[in-house]
Image (cartoon, rainbow, N blue to C red):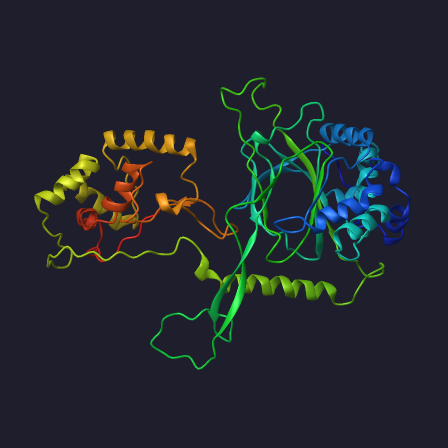
Length: 473
């Protein structure tokens, strides 16, 4: 059942009412050993890697959290959401529970109790001590229920938005069916590395230019996230994961929840793989709260913007970078005129390409489509026997995973991960992959060759320039 808002609600409850709720003693809502272990959690947090973070295995009183889970499953509806960074099912903003009508609110007493406990003075003081983050707001609550089913994910980001100070995730997975790490859904943390680059006084990295700049260049350090995670925290019932939000440093993602394979035993479809969690943030104190500093929100926004600008200045560290390979077919030919190829050239194309693309009539037909739409999609480009062999080769290599992040065998990882993260290859005549020899031939020999572009040159309104080629996969 969907929860309904009042006809004319206020998005925020009055500050006085929130103060009264958050100032109450909510100790009984938490597991009995949480607050007594503040020193141990503080020590673990201060030595955590790759950046400061904490994990509390059992946070909430078990009967309370079970009641919360039941209320969510019975009375909260979820909206599927998908963007360029995530695919999830999400509830409405739980910060606005006070705006619900009385009938709806009566269905969620445990959820309201949990919200008030999380933002209570008791727990905020606990987190302030553990993280050393400074004062946290009890007035500005910011939380929602997110559900990840197979295929759902959240890509790399640093959580830096507005006045956020501490991020947290409280897991509500099935308490009777422990989550398996092999199902995915883990919170993965990315380390950062410090790289140096020469920048101009305006902050940009110098580019090759005929004009000499009068601005003085200097060497600066940039923090760039590594594409390989070094810490994965699998979901677990009643577990809290948290970390201080740090511009340019607190990079993390949520691993995709993997669909059940036919060989996985004990599950009916994917019914057990529902990663439910309450995710949210603690913000800096608001006006009228203890610890409020005038101008702090603006200063934090400025630091965030500065980190983003510095990140753009580090584009030279992005991978893959364009890799130009000079080609010289040794043939003089005019505008729109394809050069003739010798028998060796034709043998190379016949070995790999679908024969239909070597027929002049097909090329002429494609050229007409290219002239009309300025783009083409060449289906069944490879010869069927080559495509089938390549599929088997790639699937076998991917199952072994030995090729991942190993430039020496022809593969590398695109980075930084908050921009792109995938395996790629670029032409390399020196490194011959023994795991995917056919793929190596295609990316290192065929596609960078002048013969391919000579064959396809009639598709363009102007002769294709045979002096370049860049391939990634």
